[in-house]
Amino acid sequence: MTDLPPRACVMGHPVAHSRSPLLHGYWLETLGIAGRYEREDVAPDRFPEFLRHLARHGYVGGNVTVPHKQAAFRDVDRRDAAADAVGAVNTVWYEAGTLVGSNTDGIGFMAHLDASVPGWEVQGGRAVVLGAGGSARSVVHALVGRKIDVAVVNRTRARAEEIARLLGRRVKPYGLAELSGLLPDTCLLVNTTTLGMAGQPPLAVDLDRIDARAVVYDIVYVPLETPLLAAAKARGLRTADGLGMLLHQAVPGFARWFGVTPQVTPELRALLEADIRAESGAH
Image (cartoon, rainbow, N blue to C red; front, top):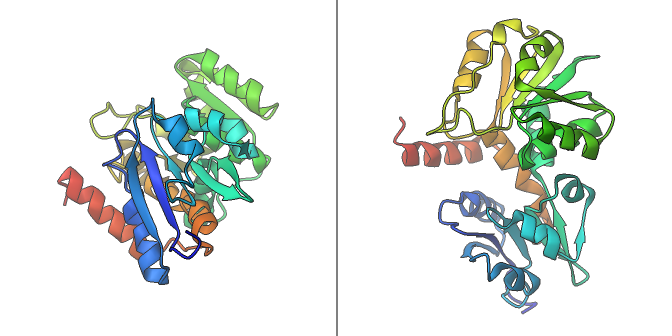
């Protein structure tokens, strides 16, 4: 087994829609690495055993997608701080025979923001994160790591309060009705909800109230430009999209599995954009 090219996979159910094989396959090919990245459709009742014996299946690690992220959190041998903060695992690898779990969404979020909007941090500014699910936790954890104050705004305030309890004093919970009053002092607005996604209602936010220096980030990437991002661009605000986050969150796993840290390039982004447009029928 040690002489065979390393193999990694994405585990989900269903998993045919995953763009991870396209993404990692591009890196393997362009970097000239003898390795493979595959899909594994694993039903929930089979997942714990499959994950615990990942090496027996011939894999050095992999990605975990819905509906297995919480199960992976429970079933890995060890978790890093990001996974503990989010309560979910999306990337696994082996260290000295120990299966380690991480959540790279926060890393991907911050890496894309730094790369696409340099100088985005406004001194004394506040970040507003819309939503209170797993993606919101990843984003808030990353922002708190930069010592940025964060307002978590959610329709159900209790879920925002849960994130505040988990991630510390820099995080304050708010209900949706309080959003308008937060915007004038906001340097970064992040949508982590599904609103604005293809097939979902648009996200209604009055961007006229937001600071003119603010950045608007939408983690949705289908469509590539959500109504929120379109409205932000129309007002002259800087923006960042979910496709960039998807690309950057894949970097740490690839580096663990194949021993080379890949780059997110315009060519790679164009490849994923074309795939998204082909699937959605957009031109």
